[in-house]
Figure 1 (spheres, rainbow, N blue to C red):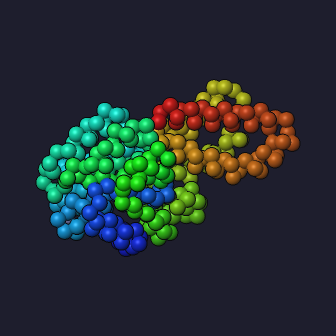
Figure 2 (figure 1 turned 180 degrees about the horizontal axis):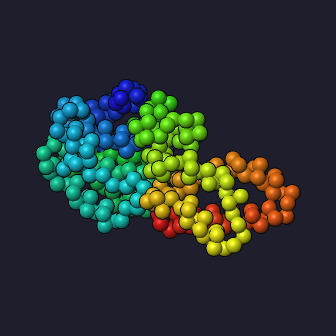
Figure 3 (figure 1 turned 90 degrees about the horizontal axis):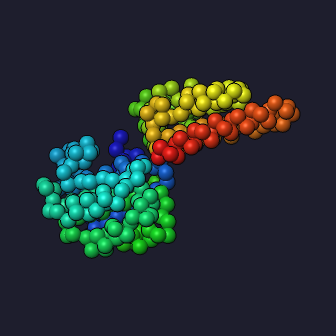
Length: 287
Ligand SMILES: [Zn+2]
């Protein structure tokens, strides 16, 4: 199923944006609304001779992230200023084979400090260059860029789209997993990378009983729960830990009530906090 079928209103907004004379676009939607894919869809509409036919060489190369006239930065990793400057230089070159060059800057809100470098090019872009920004929030510092863009609001994915995404990622759309996904496509991807997300998160549910007083055991538990040991780093690791903390918060009410009745519970409470502090510290220093 394509975006046109799954989110027709969003698709119609992309169509009218692509048909406009705008050279900068701001795609705005909630976290996990699949903004990178929406941005690629718009890029294909701008690069394809037929305005996004879905079957030509340009459309295929955009979908495969292999188009010479499309550059993409951001998306969870910090962007060094030198890389932004390179990108600006690239954006001034003539297109290689398409009718223009397109630059996608994902999660532009993360560029708060370096965006002034971009502003001039967005204000006076080279004639054959289009900018596509995606954002979940627009901090005040970014208003100068936002006000110069054609705004495109993206609807949240519906239940059918989420269930389909879960199935194609190898996750059974059970109530338990849907509760963890929380309506977000990015979480579907992350959960799938955990292998067996139910087993992984059940450790969070059992955290209070897993913790023993020995310091060595805390480190061992932190290692077991660390998403980085499964290869998930940076913002992804933090997001996985947030999922775990939601689960813990859901079970901790009952647990805290019981703990308050037993002095030993206070020690355990401290241990759990140490494990979580260790995990969050690692996720923060890795991201
Ligand atoms: Zn095409």
